[in-house]
Image 1: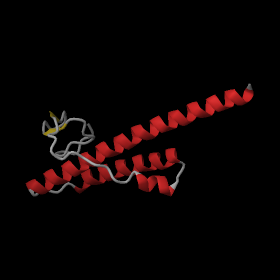
Image 2: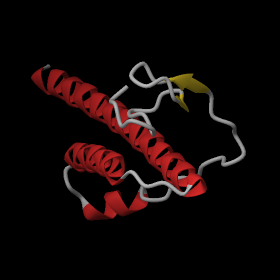
Image 3: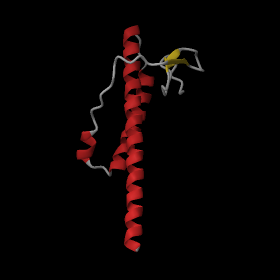
Image 4: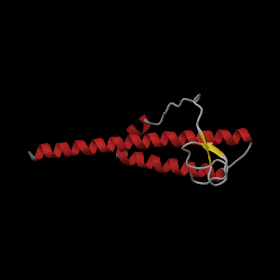
Length: 118
């Protein structure tokens, strides 16, 4: 009976870890898209905002570390999830930054104009 309990507990933990891993991977894909949109918008306007880009890079690094921890640090599994397909034809919804009023992509972590955390 203890063996069945242990097996059920192990399966529940594995399922939770897989759900957490999927959530972290989705979060990573979202912030990578946001960074790409930011860089594109800055380049299109002929502007630079290295501090904001560094904030996104730091956020991405933190999520990647979380994913590594969830995977147990297995390099083969890390490489399997490096490529993410993105639909570039989808128009992002926009909202206004509460700090400066600039239009930003809905769900963005930072304002592309003033760098305020959203």
